[in-house]
Image 1: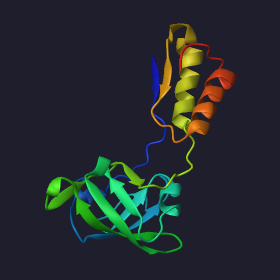
Image 2: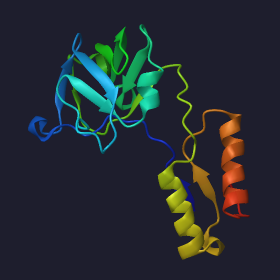
Image 3: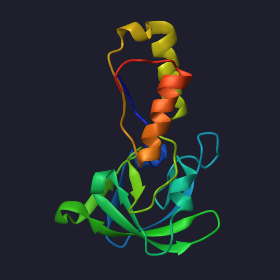
Length: 170
């Protein structure tokens, strides 16, 4: 079986001085922007979070909720600027007083589709490896973890069947 990861919207790694943790309490504000691994300001700081997909920041509007680490922290978008947004922690899951945000934790914007393809570049590399190195004869099933809508499912089927020639189970 091949289980493709699909896109994983996340914040980037933290600067080394933070020892991979930012203690967050309700009311803490962050600037949030996109930064690729090639950017000078790729790493997150105590007051500025960077994310791996520009779509995350692009869809944010004042009043939207950004959810971190599977709901362990929620932040509300307070300001919108051209290249960054300002978010404020408004809820810590489980009624806790603080939350320790670590690098590479998941982020989503509640009720905002990101328009990200269901198959990432990494997934394409995995499919190439499975087809060209392992061989599809040894693969019983190919799955992907992320579908936003029926079009994603159709795109996935098209990619795996037509582009890679896989005829097994999906």
